[in-house]
Image 1 (cartoon, one colour):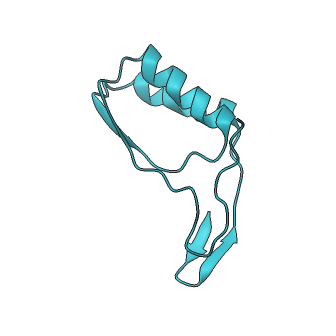
Image 2 (cartoon, rainbow, N blue to C red):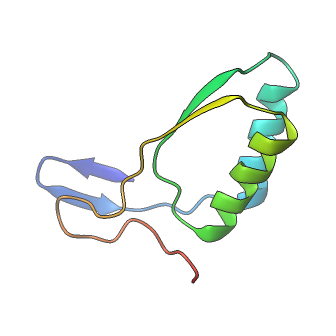
Length: 80
């Protein structure tokens, strides 16, 4: 997301497969005991992250999400 104090200018979608690959890359290199998660923009990305956290048995997870930017632009598209 491109954002400043005046608002959100642009949102760029990252593919869930890319997120999963990045997590696999990091988890295969170093042991991660704790992680903090910020905004996850779509359900598919949430599912990919959740699956990797379970697979690699990350013990401590801090969830610090943003659902709506100050500029009142929706940051997430989640399925129900």
